[in-house]
Amino acid sequence: MEQWRKRSFDWKKGFSQRFARYDARLKQAITNRHTLWMHAVSVGEVNVCTQVIRALEPRFPNLKIVVSTTTTTGMERLHSVLPSHISKIYYPLDLRGWASRALNTIRPEAIVLVEAEIWPNFLWKAIDMRIPLFLVNARLSERSYRGYRRFGFVFRRLFRGFTGVGAQNEDDAVRLKELGCRPEAIRVVGSLKYDAARLDERRLLDVPGMFRQLGVPPGAKIIVGGSIHKGEETILAEQFLRLQTRFPDAFLVLVPRHFELCREVGKELEAIGLKFAYRSEIVESTQYRPGEIQCLLVNSTGELKYFYEHATVVFIGKAWPPKEDKILSKRRLWANRSSLVRTCRNLPR
Image (cartoon, rainbow, N blue to C red):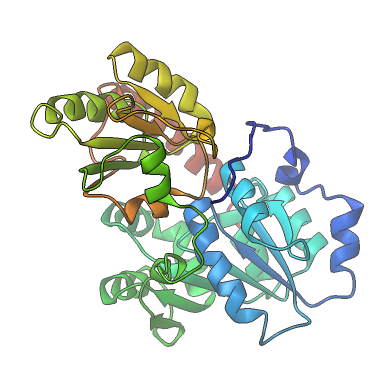
């Protein structure tokens, strides 16, 4: 069983990297090396990135790999799954000066993006520097597709600049072609997340053993809420309490999208009377009586897939919007509009 270790939401650590300011250790590591820059937004993309690295390293043993991520949870995951010889950095904020400084410092021979993470200023600079761009595990939701197509004057050149694109399915391949990707650059390779979630890998978490510690009876109905967003934990918990009247041995596992918000989620669960334990509290000596605990609140990262494997029912976050989502959507709409205006002002003439 992987021992849970305490983590803190430290936004200051590595903060200067977001402005493309790197320490001497990174600069020394990439000096006179053939460098590949890989970008994985957060935890899910990091898992895919790990599989790609495992395939690349035996073929290119002298290649120096630098992996960037956007979120603190992604950085935590990078440090837990990748060895120390692979450099880990935060992705720079997408303004022309910082994007340019990042690329001029690292000087990668190629850039690999995991899934469709399109930041215009960074990619424009890479294209101008003639750095080959690759997109792996590419997928486009209908919403993203409509947005990219609507602002084709911004994104078409970027999609055309990809040297190679690995699409998850034929529909994604068609959409990518319509957005500007060259047909000869596109290959349909399926979802690499299936490789990242291989069930034959060495187990890092003994979920059945943990359930026994929590007093969950054999054959119990396990409901897993994965990557849940704000407001969804209350809805799930209330429905679970109703469901328990029909299935008394049912057990709920909640995994918030952002683990640093688990304390806030815990307060919500306490308010509705749900008996729960934090994942961090489960150690080798922990033992609850049957029925003493109704829910496990997972305040760790990288373990969701192990709980999915043992679930009777799975709920994936963002399946319905919280009550306040309409207000938040309006705010996001204005924020995205402002961001687009700034991006358009930076268009190359």
